[in-house]
Length: 259
Ligand SMILES: C[S@@+](CC[C@H](N)C(=O)[O-])C[C@H]1O[C@@H](n2cnc3c(N)ncnc32)[C@H](O)[C@@H]1O
Image (cartoon, rainbow, N blue to C red):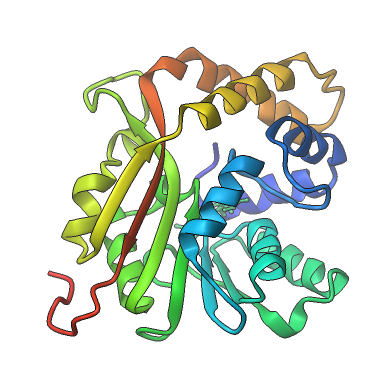
């Protein structure tokens, strides 16, 4: 998968033209019919994420590395919360803004170009932070977790979905995936009540998605071809990663600030 903002821009430009890739993801992962995702979080995972965020009307969710905003829109609809979406791809943010108008959610959503490590948001301005399948792109990763902690109000929750290596020395895996160890990294960033749980059923759904992607007739659809390239890479080392859901909260006490 691409890494720079420019690479993600062109990846998103391809994806906009490809209903096939979006439909495949929605169908196999069991997502709501109009949700636009570029991650591997499925419908059951989304339900769990919504419960873990514990949001209600008027609260502020920051969807960090939000892509086209799909999960944020769905959570705004379900909970009545406000959503601030941040992503470094200007193409994705532009798309999310257009989508907000289409879904008539402009009054409760705000999409801005920003970095995982530098959101540009105010300290303690969020009630919850969500990072779906994107934390591995942060450079450096501890700084992104400190940024999550900084923008959260005391007691606010962070919810992260991602992968972790079963063996951090597994040279088949990319260094950015091998660096993830949220059970250690979240407390170091100043979070408390840290829980990191395995989600093997999500991983199985992901495997089905990659297998089905390989069976699609790609033709000249660049988004499907890109999915197929990724499927080959991911399936070759599939046994090396576990799928995790991490939850934590910012301490209530003002003394417990990040180290
Ligand atoms: C796998 S996609 C997930 C998007 C979205 N969370 C979803 O679930 O549909 C990864 C996202 O991370 C964004 N991203 C990668 N590196 C980033 C960075 N350093 N700062 C902000 N966004 C970043 C990409 O532009 C892309 O939208």
